[in-house]
Length: 149
Image 1 (cartoon, one colour):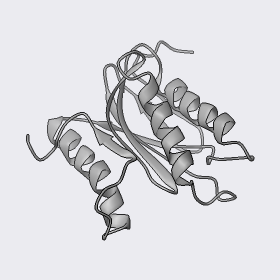
Image 2 (image 1 turned 30 degrees about the vertical axis):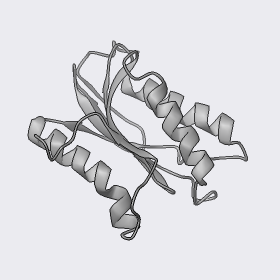
Image 3 (image 1 turned 120 degrees about the horizontal axis):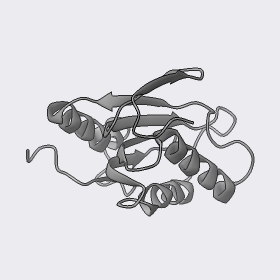
Image 4 (image 1 turned 90 degrees about the vertical axis):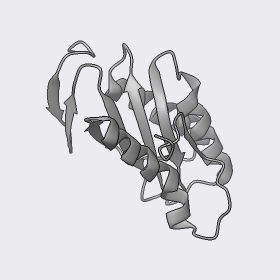
């Protein structure tokens, strides 16, 4: 396997670009057979995502919705695909009951600070778009306030 800081491209079902010191916007979906995550399951996924923040990666934002997850993350010395695999496999073992996630995920390199703030804003507003009347949502977090920059 190439070094995690090497620029490279690979393809599974979807194309994946890797760049040195990149920040990524990553999305994966719940398996069609499962359909939705309960609040307890969303809490499990949130905890898993935050667990190695500051060690294996720098977490900038995330939201765990009932049927998908968005994460804005900057890997440190571990390849992004290993990080995503660890989140998905760990949470699958904890949640149990068969397949939890679709096998593939989407990722996009965030190219500059403007795109970063736009992406973090999108992540933070995701629950309000789904549930307009909701006052708060416990499974969303960001290291920065995109409206303050």
